[in-house]
Length: 154
Image (cartoon, rainbow, N blue to C red; front, top):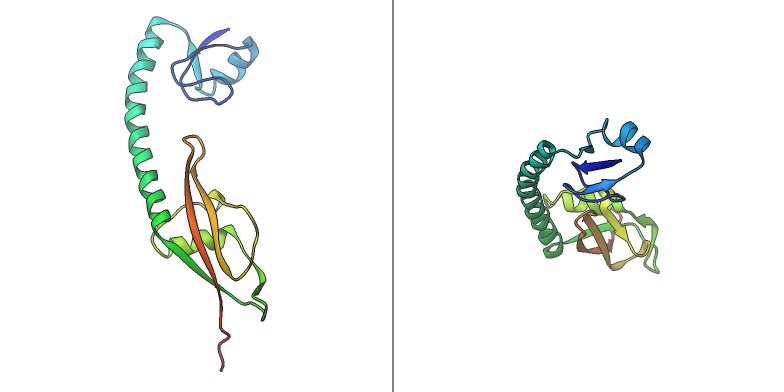
């Protein structure tokens, strides 16, 4: 079955591509979910118009994501944690803590975007990758400084 894709599907193709799929997959999934339509002249015209508006929206979205990425790389965050005399943390710094630290700087992103190359379990400076958009491959490098939290005396 030949279909015209209305949305990007990683395993099949981009918007406007004509793809060959099994009839059941097309009838039962792609067409009912709105991912594809039958190949006709009218549908080809409609997809071209949709593609033009989607390109503009995608450019605006990318610009907004690039701004966030630049802000992340320009600013480092400091996280204070309790540690022993050897500089080892009681616990660890996780993705949510990094996301919340950036949120205090008005730089917001989902904590699930944070990728730590190593577990942060000691005092020091660490790098984390922030995968802002996996589809576009936009990654920002974050600098995380972990400091010892001084215990408050009553």
